[in-house]
Length: 115
Image 1 (spheres, helix red, strand yellow):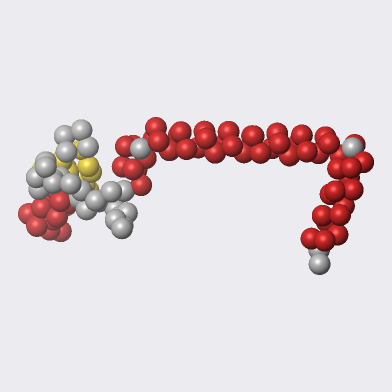
Image 2: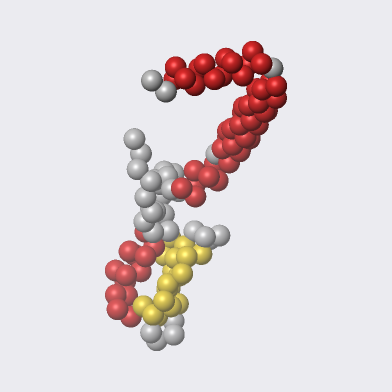
């Protein structure tokens, strides 16, 4: 079973190897697929974020939601629909309570069910 984990950013490791303690801040440029480092002396360096574009990264919660949002939405809608049908059936059964035969049946079931 795949384990969901935070994706490791290769660019961070590359920049740390290049500059070590001389990095003041780092940010991820997701559009370009790079990590950008701002150095102590005011210069800027960047490194690619992936070893290979064909490399499949481990799944994260965000990547699963991005890929499977239609399926998860359909399951959620189906669950709410099923809950609505069950609620409507329960309301219909409660409406039958005015029938004396139904009241006797329910009270008999409750008496035997508690033993």
